[in-house]
Amino acid sequence: MEQLLQHLVNGLVLGGTYALLGIGLTLIFGLMNVVNFAHGEFYTLGAYAAFAALALGGVDFVVAVLAAIGAGALLGALCERVLLRPLRAESIDTTMLVMIGVWIAMQNGELLVWGGVAKSIPHPFPTAPLVLGPVSIAPLRVFVLVLAAGLIAASYLLIHRTKLGRAMRATFQDRDTAALMGVRISRIHTATFAFGSALAAAAGALLGPVFLAYPSMGDLAALKAFCVVILGGLGNLPGATLGGLLLGIAEELGAGYVSSGYRDAVGFVIIILVLLLRPSGLFAREERIG
Amino acid sequence: MTAPEGGPLLRVEELHAAYGPVAALRGLDLTVGQGELVCLIGANGAGKTSTLRAISGLLPAARGRILFDGRPIHAAEPAEILEAGIAHCPEGRRVFPYLTVQENLEMGAYVRRDRHAVAEDLERVCTHFPILAERRRQMAGTLSGGEQQMLAIARALMARPRLILFDEPSLGLAPTLVETTFEIIADIRRRGTTVLMVEQNAYGALRMADRGYVMETGRIVLAGPARALLDDDHVRRAYLGG
Image 1 (cartoon, helix red, strand yellow):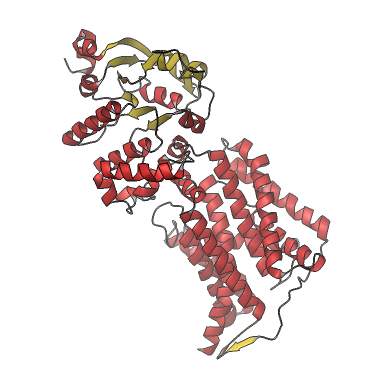
Image 2 (cartoon, helix red, strand yellow; image 1 turned 135 degrees about the vertical axis):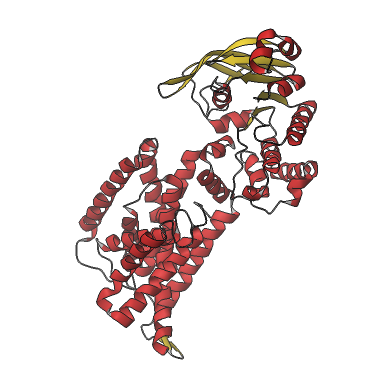
């Protein structure tokens, strides 16, 4: 029982960042119909941006996360504007291939700039864990969980309480009619891709200091983001949030009770089961954004 | 530059448009005067919906011109055309099913910057359509067909347009609701908004319109005062059931 609580807490920390990754990917997938294979690279970008800000810039950790978010949004917007906008009329296969190209290019770019040796991202938190009854947790992880929760809440507010979010949901539900309302669909695409990429970068900046930063760190993150999207259903924000938390907890439980070597396998076993039994996702109501 | 006094609000000249290799409009000409209610009738596939989609910028014009208030709009984006003053209430109502009634209405005012006037219009529309006020927080997809039509019309009004394009507003509605819908459209015109309407209910549409156009295979084949079209032999045989 005591062990279970510990696993749940660890799972939440991991799951919160998976949720961020998943929300970003599901928005891009749902609204733009782009299978973003480069999503993991924005995660890596976020980790390195945080590393640069913390190790080289010597700034506050929160500022470093914000810097990562800014870098992700900027590069995401650029990527959409330059590569995806000219291909809007093309098939999903075409844009998928382009995003695979972006994935390879970004990963090798990271290798070129930062080298292949894993970097430990410095953080200002004490390493002695906080002990709350049966659960002990590193202060860094508490911070990661809180910030992830804050960013998820901010995403909900953006989608449900702002004019941009309303236009995004309208575009997802009926593109032509949204255009008739005066929504400039191209701008919605740029904003969506920037937003999704920023969330991936935020996840990288948060988990980077927990683990390590290295150029191929995004590969597994991207796969997990796809897991979360499949779990939650296309364009489904609550689904991605719950899916992320569920995946994080399942991984922790798998690692704790089966074998830590199987940690990453747990998620994929779940995905295979979901695809077999509930292919539209665990929480799918209909196709939706929001 | 504005049109000379009494000139048409909307003028479509020699308009051609296509969906890929399939021609939809083949040299269409029509005008809509300030304050008029004009209806466009024709068989399925004649190009009525394509005409409206071309005017509102969803279907790019291959050749020809569209002038609104004397200004060319055939190369403009849908958002610019809406800002110029043309709202389009599309076929099949097309409310956003997972936005609330209020959010749908707010989408109608998406291009407007005058937030206070938008809030006022929202209240006005809700007074005008009490059923929408009642269902304000409900998802639009849960409304009945008639309610969705009211919402689609109200949403178009939220843009404060000078010209509204209605595409088959009576489609799929119960007869009493068809009557109500036509009354609402007549009322919109009485309040000073110009209307161009596409209708398969040719009799009902011509009865309320000032002028009518008959479309066949992407062009206008007959035009005239609505009364005259109602009495025309060809129109009676082809569109009014004898």
